[in-house]
Length: 168
Image (cartoon, rainbow, N blue to C red; front, side, top):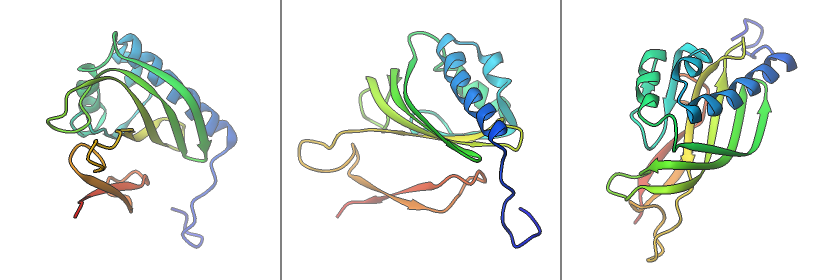
């Protein structure tokens, strides 16, 4: 934060572009199983939240959890990348072993959205993954009958959070 009215300084277009390159490379490295190269893109204090992996805090922990799902047959097909300042959003399709809710059978392909936060140097400070899960036949939303609502940042990365509330 800046001492001038609490506003953040604007990131340069070059830093945002470098961050977008790092995001694109992160998918390539995960798809090929190159965990060391993936780690080179991560800030030391990176935080990752995905519904199919344990939450990771810190580079070493994130690398341990991602090593479990990296490499073939896992593959990311990127549809769109949207970037602004320190934020990058990616939409795409993930092919691999995924069980987005406890007790749900893994599906081989799911659409996803990843929301990244970048450091001032364009490194990956954090990301949160969301999977598209179709409504159940009985009309409930999600595999556990939950609905999603936005909340403020809860993981120290300026990313919006998600809270699940039981449906009535």
